[in-house]
Amino acid sequence: MKELLLLLIHYGSQFVWAVIIADVALSWIVMVQRPRWVYHPLVRWVQNTAFQILRPFRQLLGSLGAGRMPIDISPILAMFAIQIVERVLIRLILLLPIP
Image (cartoon, rainbow, N blue to C red):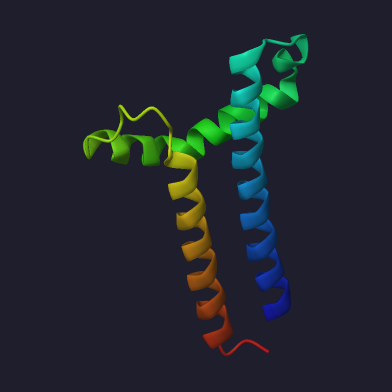
């Protein structure tokens, strides 16, 4: 049971990482050119999901006065936060008395 929970947490965090990295890559592509496949429903889903994940970090940066930086560092902060949450959850699960 522990192994299943650990795998779910690990793959879930990797999935969120992949969504954030895909959104960053898409933002670079859209800056250079606007291909027609950008309107594909899967691309829109990635952008909307990443927006929901990154919004609290962008708000935090804005409240700290770093919202006007030329580079958006909210994906980096989100990835660090996801990694920290993953490690905390893994340690908590390892401490549970579940076989």
